[in-house]
Image (tube, rainbow, N blue to C red):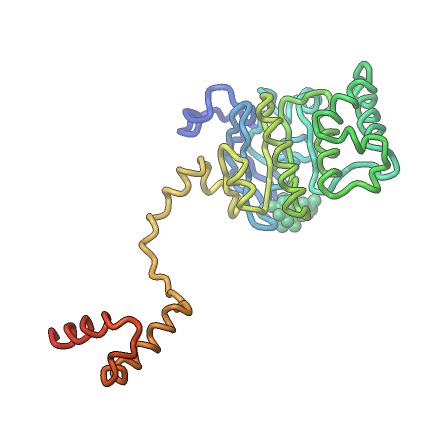
Length: 291
Ligand SMILES: Nc1ncnc2c1ncn2[C@@H]1O[C@H](COP(=O)(O)OP(=O)(O)OP(=O)(O)O)[C@@H](O)[C@H]1O
Ligand SMILES: [Mg+2]
């Protein structure tokens, strides 16, 4: 792998010292050329969404960035460290929340968090767990087994666990897949809170609304490359402004009423004294005589 550091226009927007820098990354599985030269930069403290169809290679790219897979070509740096050269250092700076929640259902939320804190050799695992529970609104459910948690609570716990030890860069692979709208909102606010605290977030999603709601920038992975990478307003400018749309208006009961009663007008002409509102008739006759 060579250190390709050719300046690109994206650098101006992202800054000189991005949290994630991917250049020319390629990856094949057998004859399937999944990534064909991916370039991507993620600014520190930002939320960057990676969109793409099923099988586009989103998880593959996340796996390379989190040192779980090797790229065939190109370079990838996380927090200024080359993932291929020093995977250990990269692992200390990051966390990964995979496509499927990694919580232990038999343990309580508090126990899950304390376990992760101990695995990460943190001092005071109990205090770390309490702080995380508080931060993600799980204090009330802290001492219940996770098996009884809702989908949203489970995801929040999963994210809370991945944040134990305050990683500087967080990878979330489809954090809200399978969640109902309310649970999705809960996860979104957790992610927003993360970024507000200075953590960099790269997330993949199938939900365009999720990217719209959360992301500072949105990259679309398509046919092995990043097709576009920009802010939502800039992406919207890529399409011509919508023409004024012709919308077929369903008639209201009022429209029906007036149309029907209008048809009866010629009949009423013979008996004008019975009509409650005689004024439309002279108007109509005027128009008819104009044309
Ligand atoms: N370990 C592997 N062995 C063989 N093929 C793989 C492996 N991992 C991924 N692939 C293939 O690489 C392609 C990209 O897969 P990947 O999981 O990265 O896509 P994705 O964008 O994350 O899709 P999804 O939206 O379904 O999660 C797919 O064709 C997949 O079958
Ligand atoms: Mg995936």
